[in-house]
Image (cartoon, rainbow over all chains, first blue to last red):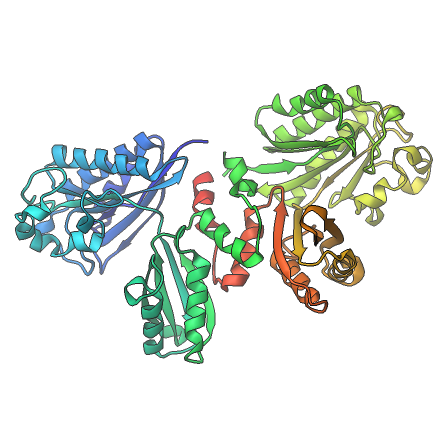
Length: 298
Length: 298
Protein backbone atom coordinates (compact mmCIF):
# COMPACT_ATOMS: atom_id res chain seq x y z
CA UNK A 1 0.00 0.00 0.00
CA UNK A 2 1.45 3.36 -1.04
CA UNK A 3 2.07 6.10 1.52
CA UNK A 4 -0.42 8.95 1.18
CA UNK A 5 -0.23 12.40 2.76
CA UNK A 6 -2.97 15.02 2.44
CA UNK A 7 -2.20 18.72 2.20
CA UNK A 8 -4.75 21.55 2.51
CA UNK A 9 -2.99 24.86 1.79
CA UNK A 10 -4.86 28.17 2.03
CA UNK A 11 -3.59 31.11 0.01
CA UNK A 12 -4.66 34.77 0.04
CA UNK A 13 -6.30 35.17 -3.36
CA UNK A 14 -9.95 34.36 -3.96
CA UNK A 15 -10.92 36.79 -6.71
CA UNK A 16 -8.42 36.82 -9.58
CA UNK A 17 -9.15 33.56 -11.45
CA UNK A 18 -6.01 33.77 -13.55
CA UNK A 19 -3.72 34.04 -10.53
CA UNK A 20 -5.64 31.28 -8.72
CA UNK A 21 -5.23 28.90 -11.66
CA UNK A 22 -1.52 29.64 -11.94
CA UNK A 23 -0.99 28.83 -8.26
CA UNK A 24 -3.13 25.65 -8.39
CA UNK A 25 -1.31 24.59 -11.57
CA UNK A 26 1.82 24.11 -9.47
CA UNK A 27 0.02 21.17 -7.83
CA UNK A 28 -1.13 19.74 -11.16
CA UNK A 29 2.43 19.80 -12.48
CA UNK A 30 3.92 17.55 -9.78
CA UNK A 31 4.13 13.80 -10.41
CA UNK A 32 2.85 11.57 -7.63
CA UNK A 33 0.36 14.20 -6.48
CA UNK A 34 -3.38 14.36 -7.07
CA UNK A 35 -5.45 17.54 -6.85
CA UNK A 36 -8.76 16.62 -5.14
CA UNK A 37 -10.45 19.97 -4.74
CA UNK A 38 -10.03 23.73 -4.61
CA UNK A 39 -12.54 26.44 -3.83
CA UNK A 40 -12.21 30.20 -3.72
CA UNK A 41 -14.23 32.66 -1.69
CA UNK A 42 -14.36 36.22 -3.01
CA UNK A 43 -15.46 37.76 0.34
CA UNK A 44 -12.69 35.98 2.17
CA UNK A 45 -10.38 36.65 -0.80
CA UNK A 46 -8.89 33.26 -0.15
CA UNK A 47 -8.58 29.83 -1.80
CA UNK A 48 -8.49 26.45 -0.08
CA UNK A 49 -6.81 23.61 -1.98
CA UNK A 50 -6.87 19.89 -1.17
CA UNK A 51 -4.37 17.50 -2.66
CA UNK A 52 -2.85 14.14 -1.78
CA UNK A 53 0.34 12.39 -2.75
CA UNK A 54 3.46 10.59 -1.65
CA UNK A 55 5.93 12.26 0.71
CA UNK A 56 8.26 13.66 -1.96
CA UNK A 57 5.33 14.79 -4.11
CA UNK A 58 3.49 16.75 -1.42
CA UNK A 59 6.72 18.48 -0.32
CA UNK A 60 7.42 19.52 -3.90
CA UNK A 61 3.86 20.66 -4.64
CA UNK A 62 3.48 22.60 -1.36
CA UNK A 63 6.76 24.42 -1.89
CA UNK A 64 6.13 25.21 -5.56
CA UNK A 65 2.65 26.56 -4.78
CA UNK A 66 4.07 28.78 -2.08
CA UNK A 67 6.74 30.10 -4.43
CA UNK A 68 4.10 30.96 -7.04
CA UNK A 69 1.76 32.52 -4.44
CA UNK A 70 4.62 34.72 -3.18
CA UNK A 71 5.32 35.81 -6.76
CA UNK A 72 1.71 36.63 -7.68
CA UNK A 73 0.17 37.93 -4.45
CA UNK A 74 1.07 41.24 -2.85
CA UNK A 75 -0.06 41.33 0.77
CA UNK A 76 0.42 45.12 0.90
CA UNK A 77 -2.80 45.50 -1.07
CA UNK A 78 -4.67 42.42 0.19
CA UNK A 79 -8.07 42.78 1.83
CA UNK A 80 -10.52 40.05 2.83
CA UNK A 81 -12.87 38.85 5.55
CA UNK A 82 -10.84 35.87 6.71
CA UNK A 83 -7.90 36.28 9.13
CA UNK A 84 -4.58 35.86 7.25
CA UNK A 85 -0.92 36.63 7.70
CA UNK A 86 0.70 35.79 4.37
CA UNK A 87 0.36 35.18 0.64
CA UNK A 88 0.55 31.47 1.36
CA UNK A 89 -1.24 31.71 4.66
CA UNK A 90 -1.24 28.19 6.08
CA UNK A 91 -0.13 24.71 4.97
CA UNK A 92 -1.25 21.72 7.05
CA UNK A 93 -0.05 18.17 6.31
CA UNK A 94 -2.36 15.33 7.31
CA UNK A 95 -1.55 11.61 7.55
CA UNK A 96 -3.93 9.52 5.40
CA UNK A 97 -2.41 6.12 4.70
CA UNK A 98 0.69 4.30 5.94
CA UNK A 99 2.03 7.60 7.24
CA UNK A 100 2.40 8.65 10.88
CA UNK A 101 1.91 12.05 12.48
CA UNK A 102 5.69 11.97 13.02
CA UNK A 103 6.18 11.70 9.26
CA UNK A 104 3.90 14.70 8.71
CA UNK A 105 5.80 16.74 11.30
CA UNK A 106 9.00 15.99 9.39
CA UNK A 107 7.35 17.03 6.14
CA UNK A 108 6.15 20.29 7.72
CA UNK A 109 9.70 21.01 8.90
CA UNK A 110 11.20 20.23 5.49
CA UNK A 111 8.72 22.49 3.68
CA UNK A 112 8.99 25.22 6.32
CA UNK A 113 12.78 25.22 6.05
CA UNK A 114 12.68 25.61 2.26
CA UNK A 115 10.10 28.39 2.40
CA UNK A 116 12.15 30.24 5.00
CA UNK A 117 15.50 29.86 3.29
CA UNK A 118 14.65 29.92 -0.40
CA UNK A 119 11.71 32.37 -0.40
CA UNK A 120 12.88 34.55 2.49
CA UNK A 121 9.50 34.23 4.23
CA UNK A 122 9.26 33.82 8.05
CA UNK A 123 7.70 30.43 8.90
CA UNK A 124 5.84 29.33 12.04
CA UNK A 125 5.32 25.64 12.76
CA UNK A 126 1.89 24.97 14.32
CA UNK A 127 -0.38 22.21 15.68
CA UNK A 128 1.46 18.88 16.01
CA UNK A 129 4.56 20.43 14.41
CA UNK A 130 4.66 23.36 16.89
CA UNK A 131 7.96 23.96 18.67
CA UNK A 132 6.30 25.75 21.64
CA UNK A 133 2.90 25.11 23.28
CA UNK A 134 1.68 28.65 22.51
CA UNK A 135 2.18 28.00 18.78
CA UNK A 136 -0.04 24.91 18.69
CA UNK A 137 -3.26 26.80 18.01
CA UNK A 138 -3.27 28.41 14.56
CA UNK A 139 -5.53 31.26 15.74
CA UNK A 140 -2.91 32.24 18.36
CA UNK A 141 -0.11 32.14 15.79
CA UNK A 142 -2.08 34.25 13.32
CA UNK A 143 -3.26 36.79 15.94
CA UNK A 144 -2.46 40.35 14.79
CA UNK A 145 -2.58 39.14 11.19
CA UNK A 146 -0.36 40.45 8.37
CA UNK A 147 -0.66 44.06 9.53
CA UNK A 148 0.26 43.28 13.15
CA UNK A 149 3.15 40.95 12.38
CA UNK A 150 5.63 43.72 11.65
CA UNK A 151 5.59 44.36 15.43
CA UNK A 152 4.80 40.82 16.66
CA UNK A 153 7.84 39.32 14.92
CA UNK A 154 10.18 41.56 16.94
CA UNK A 155 9.01 39.89 20.17
CA UNK A 156 11.56 37.11 20.92
CA UNK A 157 8.62 34.82 21.88
CA UNK A 158 7.48 35.10 18.28
CA UNK A 159 10.81 34.57 16.52
CA UNK A 160 10.05 32.46 13.42
CA UNK A 161 10.99 28.74 13.33
CA UNK A 162 12.54 29.21 9.87
CA UNK A 163 13.45 32.10 7.62
CA UNK A 164 14.36 35.73 8.32
CA UNK A 165 13.55 37.28 11.67
CA UNK A 166 11.81 40.18 10.01
CA UNK A 167 8.59 40.41 8.05
CA UNK A 168 8.51 39.88 4.29
CA UNK A 169 6.57 42.95 3.22
CA UNK A 170 5.21 41.54 0.00
CA UNK A 171 4.53 37.94 1.09
CA UNK A 172 3.92 38.21 4.84
CA UNK A 173 4.64 35.02 6.77
CA UNK A 174 3.40 31.43 6.60
CA UNK A 175 2.19 28.82 9.09
CA UNK A 176 3.17 25.24 8.29
CA UNK A 177 1.89 22.36 10.40
CA UNK A 178 0.81 18.77 10.85
CA UNK A 179 -2.62 17.74 12.10
CA UNK A 180 -5.22 15.00 12.01
CA UNK A 181 -7.99 15.39 9.44
CA UNK A 182 -10.72 17.79 10.43
CA UNK A 183 -14.37 16.84 9.97
CA UNK A 184 -16.85 19.67 9.31
CA UNK A 185 -20.13 18.43 10.75
CA UNK A 186 -23.38 20.39 11.12
CA UNK A 187 -26.54 19.38 12.98
CA UNK A 188 -29.86 20.98 12.02
CA UNK A 189 -32.50 21.95 14.59
CA UNK A 190 -36.23 22.48 14.02
CA UNK A 191 -36.16 25.97 15.51
CA UNK A 192 -35.59 29.35 13.86
CA UNK A 193 -34.28 30.64 17.21
CA UNK A 194 -30.55 31.27 16.82
CA UNK A 195 -30.19 31.73 20.60
CA UNK A 196 -31.00 28.06 21.12
CA UNK A 197 -28.48 26.94 18.48
CA UNK A 198 -25.88 29.20 20.07
CA UNK A 199 -26.56 27.89 23.56
CA UNK A 200 -26.24 24.29 22.41
CA UNK A 201 -23.04 25.11 20.51
CA UNK A 202 -21.59 26.61 23.68
CA UNK A 203 -22.28 23.49 25.73
CA UNK A 204 -20.89 20.97 23.23
CA UNK A 205 -17.69 22.82 22.41
CA UNK A 206 -14.40 22.51 24.25
CA UNK A 207 -14.11 26.11 25.43
CA UNK A 208 -17.62 25.88 26.93
CA UNK A 209 -16.83 22.76 28.96
CA UNK A 210 -17.96 20.35 26.26
CA UNK A 211 -16.15 17.81 24.14
CA UNK A 212 -12.39 18.09 23.92
CA UNK A 213 -11.99 18.24 20.14
CA UNK A 214 -15.14 20.14 19.14
CA UNK A 215 -15.37 23.73 17.95
CA UNK A 216 -18.97 24.92 17.48
CA UNK A 217 -21.19 27.88 16.75
CA UNK A 218 -24.86 28.54 16.03
CA UNK A 219 -25.80 29.37 12.43
CA UNK A 220 -29.13 30.45 10.95
CA UNK A 221 -30.30 28.71 7.75
CA UNK A 222 -32.49 31.53 6.46
CA UNK A 223 -34.02 29.75 3.47
CA UNK A 224 -35.20 26.77 5.55
CA UNK A 225 -36.13 28.92 8.56
CA UNK A 226 -34.20 26.62 10.88
CA UNK A 227 -30.90 26.82 12.76
CA UNK A 228 -27.81 24.71 12.89
CA UNK A 229 -25.04 23.80 15.30
CA UNK A 230 -22.03 24.10 13.00
CA UNK A 231 -19.04 22.13 14.26
CA UNK A 232 -15.44 21.36 13.45
CA UNK A 233 -14.32 18.03 14.86
CA UNK A 234 -10.58 18.64 15.06
CA UNK A 235 -9.69 15.10 16.13
CA UNK A 236 -12.33 12.60 15.03
CA UNK A 237 -10.30 9.72 16.46
CA UNK A 238 -10.68 11.05 19.98
CA UNK A 239 -14.03 12.83 19.66
CA UNK A 240 -16.10 10.77 17.23
CA UNK A 241 -18.88 12.11 15.02
CA UNK A 242 -21.59 10.11 16.81
CA UNK A 243 -20.61 11.59 20.18
CA UNK A 244 -20.95 15.18 18.96
CA UNK A 245 -24.25 14.27 17.27
CA UNK A 246 -25.75 12.58 20.34
CA UNK A 247 -24.64 15.41 22.59
CA UNK A 248 -26.35 18.03 20.41
CA UNK A 249 -29.49 15.86 20.45
CA UNK A 250 -29.36 15.58 24.23
CA UNK A 251 -28.86 19.30 24.76
CA UNK A 252 -31.62 20.15 22.27
CA UNK A 253 -34.13 18.26 24.41
CA UNK A 254 -34.00 20.84 27.17
CA UNK A 255 -35.42 23.40 24.74
CA UNK A 256 -38.05 21.03 23.34
CA UNK A 257 -36.15 21.22 20.06
CA UNK A 258 -35.45 18.28 17.76
CA UNK A 259 -32.65 17.36 15.42
CA UNK A 260 -34.02 17.26 11.88
CA UNK A 261 -30.88 16.40 9.96
CA UNK A 262 -27.13 16.72 9.75
CA UNK A 263 -24.46 17.22 7.13
CA UNK A 264 -20.83 16.45 6.60
CA UNK A 265 -19.15 19.24 4.64
CA UNK A 266 -16.33 18.34 2.29
CA UNK A 267 -14.13 15.30 2.57
CA UNK A 268 -14.20 12.81 5.45
CA UNK A 269 -11.88 9.86 6.12
CA UNK A 270 -13.52 6.44 5.92
CA UNK A 271 -12.40 5.65 9.46
CA UNK A 272 -14.42 8.54 10.87
CA UNK A 273 -17.56 7.08 9.29
CA UNK A 274 -16.80 3.52 10.36
CA UNK A 275 -16.17 4.60 13.98
CA UNK A 276 -19.66 6.03 14.27
CA UNK A 277 -21.33 3.11 12.53
CA UNK A 278 -19.58 0.73 14.93
CA UNK A 279 -21.25 2.60 17.77
CA UNK A 280 -24.77 2.48 16.36
CA UNK A 281 -24.64 -1.12 15.16
CA UNK A 282 -22.67 -2.23 18.25
CA UNK A 283 -20.20 -3.79 15.82
CA UNK A 284 -17.58 -6.10 17.30
CA UNK A 285 -14.12 -6.60 15.80
CA UNK A 286 -14.83 -4.68 12.64
CA UNK A 287 -11.76 -3.73 10.65
CA UNK A 288 -11.47 -1.17 7.89
CA UNK A 289 -9.75 -3.97 5.94
CA UNK A 290 -13.23 -5.45 5.51
CA UNK A 291 -14.31 -2.52 3.37
CA UNK A 292 -14.23 -3.79 -0.20
CA UNK A 293 -13.03 -0.50 -1.70
CA UNK A 294 -10.28 -0.27 0.89
CA UNK A 295 -9.00 -3.74 -0.06
CA UNK A 296 -9.14 -2.91 -3.74
CA UNK A 297 -7.13 0.26 -3.19
CA UNK A 298 -4.36 -1.54 -1.28
CA UNK B 1 -12.18 5.68 -12.59
CA UNK B 2 -11.50 2.12 -13.74
CA UNK B 3 -14.28 -0.44 -14.11
CA UNK B 4 -14.16 -3.08 -11.36
CA UNK B 5 -16.05 -6.36 -11.23
CA UNK B 6 -15.95 -8.72 -8.24
CA UNK B 7 -16.04 -12.48 -8.67
CA UNK B 8 -16.59 -15.02 -5.85
CA UNK B 9 -16.18 -18.52 -7.29
CA UNK B 10 -16.71 -21.61 -5.09
CA UNK B 11 -14.97 -24.84 -6.08
CA UNK B 12 -15.33 -28.34 -4.65
CA UNK B 13 -11.96 -28.90 -2.99
CA UNK B 14 -11.24 -27.81 0.57
CA UNK B 15 -8.69 -30.37 1.78
CA UNK B 16 -5.87 -30.90 -0.71
CA UNK B 17 -3.71 -27.78 -0.31
CA UNK B 18 -1.66 -28.46 -3.43
CA UNK B 19 -4.73 -28.69 -5.67
CA UNK B 20 -6.27 -25.61 -4.03
CA UNK B 21 -3.12 -23.55 -4.67
CA UNK B 22 -2.95 -24.67 -8.31
CA UNK B 23 -6.55 -23.58 -8.89
CA UNK B 24 -6.12 -20.25 -7.08
CA UNK B 25 -2.86 -19.66 -9.00
CA UNK B 26 -4.95 -19.28 -12.15
CA UNK B 27 -6.29 -16.04 -10.66
CA UNK B 28 -2.85 -14.81 -9.64
CA UNK B 29 -1.56 -15.32 -13.19
CA UNK B 30 -4.06 -13.01 -14.89
CA UNK B 31 -3.10 -9.37 -15.45
CA UNK B 32 -5.66 -6.77 -14.39
CA UNK B 33 -7.01 -9.05 -11.66
CA UNK B 34 -6.39 -8.88 -7.90
CA UNK B 35 -6.89 -11.82 -5.55
CA UNK B 36 -8.47 -10.44 -2.36
CA UNK B 37 -9.16 -13.54 -0.33
CA UNK B 38 -9.63 -17.31 -0.39
CA UNK B 39 -10.62 -19.67 2.39
CA UNK B 40 -11.07 -23.42 2.42
CA UNK B 41 -13.30 -25.48 4.69
CA UNK B 42 -12.32 -29.13 5.16
CA UNK B 43 -15.76 -30.22 6.41
CA UNK B 44 -17.47 -28.57 3.49
CA UNK B 45 -14.59 -29.72 1.23
CA UNK B 46 -14.96 -26.44 -0.58
CA UNK B 47 -12.99 -23.24 -1.23
CA UNK B 48 -14.41 -19.74 -1.64
CA UNK B 49 -12.27 -17.26 -3.61
CA UNK B 50 -12.75 -13.49 -3.90
CA UNK B 51 -11.07 -11.52 -6.62
CA UNK B 52 -11.66 -8.24 -8.45
CA UNK B 53 -10.57 -6.91 -11.80
CA UNK B 54 -11.54 -5.34 -15.08
CA UNK B 55 -14.06 -7.01 -17.37
CA UNK B 56 -11.54 -8.85 -19.56
CA UNK B 57 -9.48 -9.89 -16.53
CA UNK B 58 -12.31 -11.43 -14.52
CA UNK B 59 -13.59 -13.35 -17.56
CA UNK B 60 -10.13 -14.77 -18.17
CA UNK B 61 -9.47 -15.62 -14.51
CA UNK B 62 -12.90 -17.21 -13.94
CA UNK B 63 -12.58 -19.38 -17.04
CA UNK B 64 -8.98 -20.44 -16.34
CA UNK B 65 -9.84 -21.37 -12.74
CA UNK B 66 -12.76 -23.45 -13.94
CA UNK B 67 -10.58 -25.25 -16.47
CA UNK B 68 -8.01 -26.08 -13.78
CA UNK B 69 -10.72 -27.17 -11.27
CA UNK B 70 -12.21 -29.49 -13.90
CA UNK B 71 -8.75 -30.99 -14.49
CA UNK B 72 -7.87 -31.55 -10.83
CA UNK B 73 -11.19 -32.36 -9.16
CA UNK B 74 -13.10 -35.59 -9.74
CA UNK B 75 -16.69 -35.24 -8.59
CA UNK B 76 -17.19 -39.02 -8.70
CA UNK B 77 -15.21 -39.28 -5.47
CA UNK B 78 -16.17 -35.93 -3.88
CA UNK B 79 -17.80 -35.78 -0.45
CA UNK B 80 -18.49 -32.74 1.72
CA UNK B 81 -21.08 -31.09 3.94
CA UNK B 82 -21.99 -28.22 1.62
CA UNK B 83 -24.46 -28.70 -1.26
CA UNK B 84 -22.61 -28.78 -4.61
CA UNK B 85 -23.18 -29.85 -8.17
CA UNK B 86 -19.79 -29.47 -9.86
CA UNK B 87 -16.02 -29.20 -9.60
CA UNK B 88 -16.41 -25.45 -10.16
CA UNK B 89 -19.70 -25.21 -8.34
CA UNK B 90 -20.79 -21.61 -8.68
CA UNK B 91 -19.37 -18.37 -10.13
CA UNK B 92 -21.16 -15.11 -9.31
CA UNK B 93 -20.12 -11.78 -10.84
CA UNK B 94 -20.83 -8.64 -8.83
CA UNK B 95 -20.73 -5.00 -9.98
CA UNK B 96 -18.39 -2.92 -7.82
CA UNK B 97 -17.40 0.25 -9.65
CA UNK B 98 -18.50 1.87 -12.90
CA UNK B 99 -20.10 -1.42 -13.92
CA UNK B 100 -23.82 -2.17 -14.19
CA UNK B 101 -25.71 -5.34 -13.37
CA UNK B 102 -26.28 -5.57 -17.12
CA UNK B 103 -22.52 -5.70 -17.66
CA UNK B 104 -22.22 -8.51 -15.09
CA UNK B 105 -25.01 -10.48 -16.79
CA UNK B 106 -23.08 -10.21 -20.06
CA UNK B 107 -19.91 -11.38 -18.31
CA UNK B 108 -21.76 -14.35 -16.80
CA UNK B 109 -23.04 -15.30 -20.27
CA UNK B 110 -19.59 -14.98 -21.83
CA UNK B 111 -17.97 -17.14 -19.14
CA UNK B 112 -20.85 -19.64 -19.14
CA UNK B 113 -20.62 -20.03 -22.92
CA UNK B 114 -16.89 -20.74 -22.80
CA UNK B 115 -17.26 -23.25 -19.95
CA UNK B 116 -20.03 -25.04 -21.81
CA UNK B 117 -18.33 -25.14 -25.20
CA UNK B 118 -14.64 -25.46 -24.34
CA UNK B 119 -14.86 -27.61 -21.19
CA UNK B 120 -17.95 -29.61 -22.13
CA UNK B 121 -19.62 -28.81 -18.79
CA UNK B 122 -23.37 -28.03 -18.56
CA UNK B 123 -23.89 -24.45 -17.34
CA UNK B 124 -26.89 -22.88 -15.60
CA UNK B 125 -27.27 -19.11 -15.44
CA UNK B 126 -28.72 -17.96 -12.09
CA UNK B 127 -29.82 -14.88 -10.10
CA UNK B 128 -29.85 -11.73 -12.25
CA UNK B 129 -28.43 -13.72 -15.19
CA UNK B 130 -31.15 -16.40 -14.99
CA UNK B 131 -33.03 -17.17 -18.21
CA UNK B 132 -36.12 -18.47 -16.38
CA UNK B 133 -37.67 -17.37 -13.08
CA UNK B 134 -37.22 -20.82 -11.49
CA UNK B 135 -33.46 -20.58 -12.06
CA UNK B 136 -33.06 -17.32 -10.18
CA UNK B 137 -32.50 -18.93 -6.78
CA UNK B 138 -29.21 -20.85 -6.62
CA UNK B 139 -30.62 -23.33 -4.08
CA UNK B 140 -33.35 -24.30 -6.58
CA UNK B 141 -30.81 -24.73 -9.37
CA UNK B 142 -28.54 -26.88 -7.21
CA UNK B 143 -31.37 -29.03 -5.81
CA UNK B 144 -30.53 -32.72 -6.24
CA UNK B 145 -26.83 -31.88 -6.26
CA UNK B 146 -24.19 -33.65 -8.36
CA UNK B 147 -25.68 -37.07 -7.72
CA UNK B 148 -29.21 -36.04 -8.69
CA UNK B 149 -28.26 -34.07 -11.78
CA UNK B 150 -27.84 -37.16 -13.99
CA UNK B 151 -31.64 -37.42 -13.87
CA UNK B 152 -32.53 -33.72 -13.43
CA UNK B 153 -30.70 -32.69 -16.61
CA UNK B 154 -32.95 -34.96 -18.73
CA UNK B 155 -35.99 -32.89 -17.71
CA UNK B 156 -36.51 -30.31 -20.52
CA UNK B 157 -37.23 -27.69 -17.82
CA UNK B 158 -33.65 -28.16 -16.67
CA UNK B 159 -31.89 -28.13 -20.02
CA UNK B 160 -28.61 -26.27 -19.48
CA UNK B 161 -28.17 -22.70 -20.77
CA UNK B 162 -24.80 -23.61 -22.30
CA UNK B 163 -22.82 -26.77 -22.93
CA UNK B 164 -23.88 -30.39 -23.46
CA UNK B 165 -27.35 -31.55 -22.52
CA UNK B 166 -25.97 -34.41 -20.50
CA UNK B 167 -23.96 -34.49 -17.26
CA UNK B 168 -20.18 -34.31 -17.26
CA UNK B 169 -19.37 -37.28 -15.02
CA UNK B 170 -16.01 -36.03 -13.82
CA UNK B 171 -16.77 -32.30 -13.50
CA UNK B 172 -20.52 -32.15 -12.83
CA UNK B 173 -22.16 -28.89 -13.86
CA UNK B 174 -21.64 -25.23 -12.98
CA UNK B 175 -23.88 -22.30 -12.02
CA UNK B 176 -22.76 -18.92 -13.36
CA UNK B 177 -24.57 -15.74 -12.35
CA UNK B 178 -24.68 -12.04 -11.63
CA UNK B 179 -25.80 -10.58 -8.31
CA UNK B 180 -25.45 -7.61 -5.99
CA UNK B 181 -22.89 -7.97 -3.20
CA UNK B 182 -24.07 -9.99 -0.23
CA UNK B 183 -23.47 -8.74 3.31
CA UNK B 184 -23.07 -11.38 6.04
CA UNK B 185 -24.35 -9.71 9.20
CA UNK B 186 -24.86 -11.33 12.61
CA UNK B 187 -26.57 -9.85 15.67
CA UNK B 188 -25.70 -11.22 19.12
CA UNK B 189 -28.33 -11.69 21.86
CA UNK B 190 -27.77 -11.91 25.61
CA UNK B 191 -29.56 -15.24 25.89
CA UNK B 192 -28.23 -18.81 25.63
CA UNK B 193 -31.70 -19.90 24.46
CA UNK B 194 -31.42 -20.90 20.80
CA UNK B 195 -35.24 -21.04 20.52
CA UNK B 196 -35.40 -17.28 20.98
CA UNK B 197 -32.69 -16.65 18.34
CA UNK B 198 -34.53 -18.99 15.97
CA UNK B 199 -37.88 -17.31 16.55
CA UNK B 200 -36.40 -13.87 15.90
CA UNK B 201 -34.64 -15.16 12.78
CA UNK B 202 -37.94 -16.48 11.47
CA UNK B 203 -39.69 -13.13 11.88
CA UNK B 204 -37.00 -11.00 10.25
CA UNK B 205 -36.40 -13.21 7.22
CA UNK B 206 -38.23 -13.01 3.92
CA UNK B 207 -39.76 -16.49 3.98
CA UNK B 208 -41.19 -15.82 7.45
CA UNK B 209 -42.92 -12.60 6.38
CA UNK B 210 -39.99 -10.36 7.28
CA UNK B 211 -37.65 -8.22 5.23
CA UNK B 212 -37.53 -8.87 1.51
CA UNK B 213 -33.78 -9.41 1.11
CA UNK B 214 -32.91 -11.09 4.42
CA UNK B 215 -32.05 -14.74 4.97
CA UNK B 216 -31.64 -15.62 8.67
CA UNK B 217 -31.17 -18.43 11.17
CA UNK B 218 -30.46 -18.80 14.88
CA UNK B 219 -26.94 -19.87 15.86
CA UNK B 220 -25.51 -20.76 19.29
CA UNK B 221 -22.15 -19.22 20.26
CA UNK B 222 -21.07 -21.94 22.70
CA UNK B 223 -17.92 -20.29 24.06
CA UNK B 224 -19.71 -17.06 24.96
CA UNK B 225 -22.91 -18.83 26.07
CA UNK B 226 -25.03 -16.51 23.95
CA UNK B 227 -26.97 -16.84 20.71
CA UNK B 228 -26.94 -15.02 17.43
CA UNK B 229 -29.29 -14.15 14.60
CA UNK B 230 -27.07 -14.94 11.63
CA UNK B 231 -28.19 -13.14 8.47
CA UNK B 232 -27.37 -12.80 4.81
CA UNK B 233 -28.47 -9.47 3.38
CA UNK B 234 -28.77 -10.39 -0.27
CA UNK B 235 -29.52 -6.88 -1.49
CA UNK B 236 -28.17 -4.26 0.89
CA UNK B 237 -29.32 -1.45 -1.39
CA UNK B 238 -32.95 -2.41 -0.87
CA UNK B 239 -32.77 -3.88 2.63
CA UNK B 240 -30.13 -1.87 4.49
CA UNK B 241 -28.03 -3.18 7.38
CA UNK B 242 -29.59 -0.79 9.90
CA UNK B 243 -33.08 -2.00 9.07
CA UNK B 244 -32.20 -5.64 9.74
CA UNK B 245 -30.39 -4.60 12.92
CA UNK B 246 -33.26 -2.51 14.28
CA UNK B 247 -35.78 -5.20 13.44
CA UNK B 248 -33.85 -7.84 15.39
CA UNK B 249 -33.63 -5.40 18.32
CA UNK B 250 -37.38 -4.77 18.17
CA UNK B 251 -38.26 -8.46 18.03
CA UNK B 252 -35.82 -9.27 20.85
CA UNK B 253 -37.74 -6.97 23.18
CA UNK B 254 -40.74 -9.27 23.30
CA UNK B 255 -38.52 -11.90 24.97
CA UNK B 256 -36.85 -9.43 27.34
CA UNK B 257 -33.65 -10.11 25.45
CA UNK B 258 -31.10 -7.47 24.48
CA UNK B 259 -28.72 -7.04 21.58
CA UNK B 260 -25.17 -7.16 22.93
CA UNK B 261 -23.22 -6.76 19.71
CA UNK B 262 -23.08 -7.46 16.01
CA UNK B 263 -20.56 -8.45 13.38
CA UNK B 264 -20.02 -8.07 9.68
CA UNK B 265 -18.36 -11.18 8.26
CA UNK B 266 -15.93 -10.76 5.37
CA UNK B 267 -15.98 -7.92 2.90
CA UNK B 268 -18.61 -5.19 2.74
CA UNK B 269 -19.05 -2.41 0.17
CA UNK B 270 -18.52 1.10 1.49
CA UNK B 271 -21.96 2.10 0.29
CA UNK B 272 -23.60 -0.44 2.59
CA UNK B 273 -21.87 1.16 5.58
CA UNK B 274 -22.61 4.71 4.49
CA UNK B 275 -26.32 3.92 3.97
CA UNK B 276 -26.69 2.87 7.59
CA UNK B 277 -24.68 5.75 8.97
CA UNK B 278 -26.86 8.16 7.01
CA UNK B 279 -29.84 6.75 8.86
CA UNK B 280 -28.38 7.04 12.35
CA UNK B 281 -26.87 10.50 11.89
CA UNK B 282 -29.86 11.71 9.84
CA UNK B 283 -27.33 12.79 7.23
CA UNK B 284 -28.61 14.99 4.41
CA UNK B 285 -27.13 15.03 0.91
CA UNK B 286 -24.14 12.87 1.78
CA UNK B 287 -22.29 11.46 -1.20
CA UNK B 288 -19.78 8.64 -1.27
CA UNK B 289 -17.60 11.09 -3.24
CA UNK B 290 -17.00 12.84 0.09
CA UNK B 291 -15.13 9.82 1.42
CA UNK B 292 -11.46 10.75 1.21
CA UNK B 293 -10.28 7.25 0.31
CA UNK B 294 -12.92 7.01 -2.39
CA UNK B 295 -11.68 10.25 -3.97
CA UNK B 296 -8.08 9.10 -3.80
CA UNK B 297 -8.96 5.80 -5.50
CA UNK B 298 -10.70 7.54 -8.41
